[in-house]
Amino acid sequence: MTVRAILDTKGHHVQIVEPDIKLSAAVTILAEKKIGSVLVMTNGRIEGILSERDVVRGLSERGAAVLDEPVSSVMTRKIISCKLSDAVSTIMEVMTLGKFRHLPVVEDGRVIGLISIGDVVKWRVGEYEAEQEALRDYIKTA
Image (cartoon, rainbow, N blue to C red):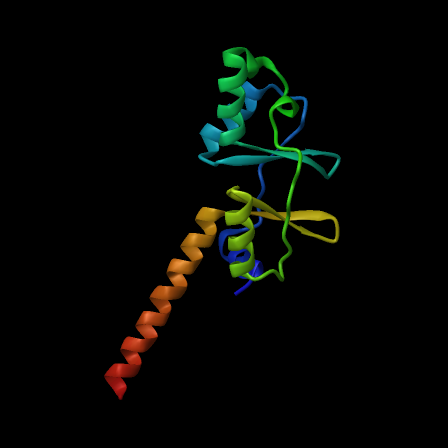
């Protein structure tokens, strides 16, 4: 199974913020949208990603004052992305080895989606359930 299958099911919407907005505004977006990360972009170009983990790290290192700083001061700058054609098993390995939970999907230089580890787990559970049901049906008809 590929990343395309997950995005076709969950949708292609990606929450984006600019690098100069205050961290407090980004935290509000994370809370209101009930999401774990936002892409930080300028003019269609990925500058970084801000995750809940980045926020916690910033608070731990600099205290509540970090909330008045720009998102760019705490975001993760090194971005690893995937493509629609990437296998789900491959991105699971990339996320596990890299110890991150969100992966932008990029095609032809454009961001077209964002995959979370939760999306991957949900997809895999659905696959296993479908396999089990198919086996049950096979056994019933055998």
